[in-house]
Each structure stands twice: as C-alpha cells, then as structure tokens.
Image (cartoon, rainbow, N blue to C red; front, side, top):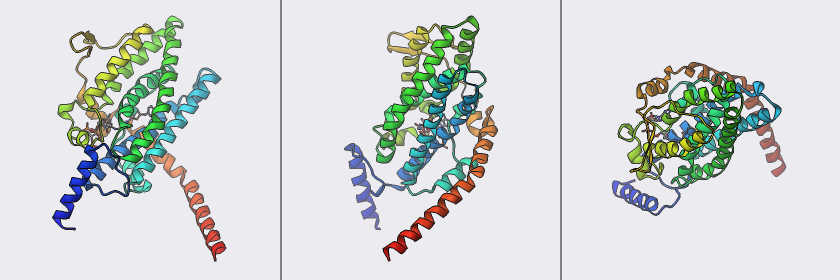
Length: 318
Ligand code: FAQ
C-alpha cells in the first residue's frame, strides 16, 4: 500500500473516531490502535481471572450458605468476564494461547490489586465494595469506548459488577452493625484495601504514558485521575453511612472543587507490585500456571471432539 493510501485510511479512521462510530474487527485500523487495544483488553481479561483467586479461597469458609452462594456466583461471574474479554481480544488477531503465554511469563500485566492477600472474611466485603466499586467506575466509562467488541462486553460486565459491589457493601454493612469485633474486622478490611484500591486506576495523569493517545482514540473516556476522584467521591459517603473511617488523615471535603481531597499515594509500592514484587505475585501466577496445566486434558478432549464433529459433518455433506 502506498503512503498516500495509508494516509487516506488513517484520515477516514480518525474521522470515524471523531464521529463516535464503533470500530469493528474487520475494519481497517492503525497498527498502534490494534496493539494498544490488545494490551489493555488482555490486561483487563487477566485481571478478571487472577481476581478470582483471592475470593475463590474464601468460598469454603463463607460464614453461611447464603454468603457462600453469593460469593460462588460472583467468582463465576469474574471467570465469565475473562471469557468475554479474551474473546474480544482475539478479534484483534491474537490467539488465546499467546495471551496466556504472556500472562504466565510476566510479559502482560494484570491489576496490581490482586497481589494483596485476603486474610479475613471482611476482605470479601472490602473487595466487593471497593475493588468492584473501582472496577465499575472505570468500566462504565468503557461502555462508550471506540472498539465495538470491547464496548459490548462492558455492558454485561457492568451489570454484574454492580451486583458484586452491592454484595460486598452488604457484607461490610452487616459486619459494621455487628459485634465490636465484627466492626473492627470491617474497619481493618477497609484500612488494608483502601489505598491499593485507589492505585487500581493507575499512575497519576502526569505519569501515565498511555493516557493521552488512548483518550484521543476514545479507548479511555476518562483519565486515571478523573476516575480515581469519582471513586473517592462516591465511596466516602458510603463508609460514613456504616460508621467506618479511612486510613488517610488528608481526606477531607473540598467545597471549591465539590469533591474530596486525599493524601498522596505510595507510588513506590505500586510500581513494586506491578513489577512482580507484591505480597502475592508469585502465588497468583503459579496458581494460574497450575490451572492452565491441569486443564490441558480438558482442552485436548474438546479439540478431539470438535475434530470428530467436523469430520462427521464433512462426511454428511458428501
Ligand atoms: N495494575 O499509562 P497507564 C476488576 C500499568 S478489573 C497493574 O496509565 P493505561 C474486576 C499500565 O498497564 C480490574 N498495572 O496505562 C474484578 C501501563 O503499563 P504498560 C482491571 C497497571 O493502560 C473485581 C503502565 O502501568 N481493570 O477489578 C495498573 O492507559 C474483583 C502505565 O499506566 C482494567 O483493566 C494497575 N492497577 O491505564 C475482578 C480496566 N495501572 O501496559 C475480580 C481496563 C496501570 O504500558 C474481583 N484498563 N498499570 O506496560 C484500564 O482502564 C487501563 O488499562 C488502566 C491503566 C486505567 C488500568
């Protein structure tokens, strides 16, 4: 293709983005757009399935049948989100095997938040309320992202995340209204998960190398700092309602900006976790590799069955 032809395709592409049209898998797109989407969608997919691990550990220890059923359903939903997102990512021309290879070798990232341990039952409340709460703020914005398969996956994911957030908040509310020990457990969960949840939104805008281009392509509809601020403003009144406090002496209402100010986050800790040195990174990746290896016979059986079906269909056609 000549340079002039490429330039014309680029111009048409930019015009479609400006027009808020969805880009579909078979449409022409700049190579950088495709790669950036593979990076973000796969990081998102990996986060969903690695995110099953801290909560999966608590299914057998849920305090009642009702809690167990809700947690089981939530963890299954996260697996489903991973599936939609891997499928959306595959439409960009990368295979599921390659995506898993990238996760297992550390080439692809997943959300920092899932490298923290879930040590008490209150952490199931804190994860649902705060981690899913943060995920929704980010993902509602992604419903209007420019890549069609990603945007459509987000519609259902957001509905389910909304249930997850409520089940988490309800656990926290029950504990906060319980015995002094239960309230202390809820407070401890909030203390440990609050700052890591704020870091989920990624580095501050001035330190975020991808934001500018991603906002231009309407992959990201809001910046990391805008989303983080929206999350703080939404969550502080919820904690006030159930009588919990935040581990941040600088958190206070700012009438001028009509939002909360909050303290500086520990970005050294964030980068340590992202680079693989968080409390649970090794444990999470080895659990994923084991699941992949243990599932080999299922994949082989499914492939053998599909081949058999294809042969039978061919013979029928002859
Ligand atoms: N953890 O330039 P930016 C969930 C990396 S889903 C690790 O700002 P970008 C559901 C970033 O990749 C949670 N790495 O990057 C659930 C980049 O590195 P790279 C996941 C992070 O992409 C709940 C570098 O830092 N949600 O929780 C993180 O423009 C409960 C520079 O950063 C999504 O993935 C981080 N927190 O913005 C499941 C949503 N932040 O790739 C189970 C979609 C940044 O250049 C249980 N993703 N990095 O080497 C996004 O919106 C964006 O990708 C951001 C990052 C906002 C996460």
